[in-house]
Length: 258
Image (cartoon, rainbow, N blue to C red):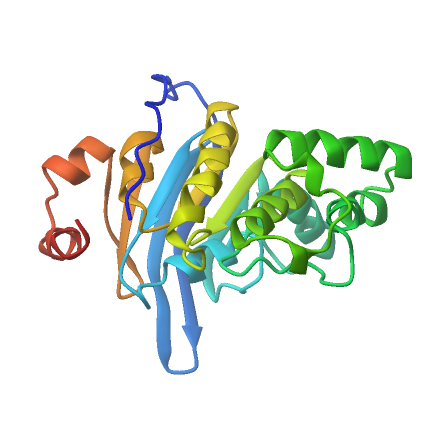
């Protein structure tokens, strides 16, 4: 399914600072090389959509950006902090990076409100009244304030994913990572989640989105990156990708999904 959000305003990112730097990143799972010498720089406020076939390394790469997976070689720097074994660095990076997964990963025994406020209260030591007020602001933002006291099992898939986005935003991150956030949703629920993501992009959030939603990629992304066999094969603007891709592997992939 493709979705046609309203066109994003033109944004000038040339003067923006690099907020994510990856240099020569490798990742192995046993004998399988999941990432092969991946290098990129992503600017603050930039919206990057990552494309690629299953097993291409795209999800592994964004999981390395908040150390859900540990890279084996190379450098990753997030907002000036290098990803390494120093727990202080890791905690600082994770406080700046929110992530939304394919599966919603909500706590089934907690209400929507408590799912959202758990992180701010436990990690950021936010007073309960402040955390509750923030949660309601975020539920308004994602369009479901009336669901605050319900439990995840009482919500649709699209509503659960919007709660997951609100939960990530409650930690007030500078960067949001989305790993195929609509792939587990029924088709009629996809647009409501993409609309929330588009609003987030308009607000200036730095976003990396792994998705096959080509309408979203075309309209919202500043840059697309195509992964295959663990390598970053090609990158460019949506216009470049959809009108003039250069690499044969990119052309084949796009021919199969468009």
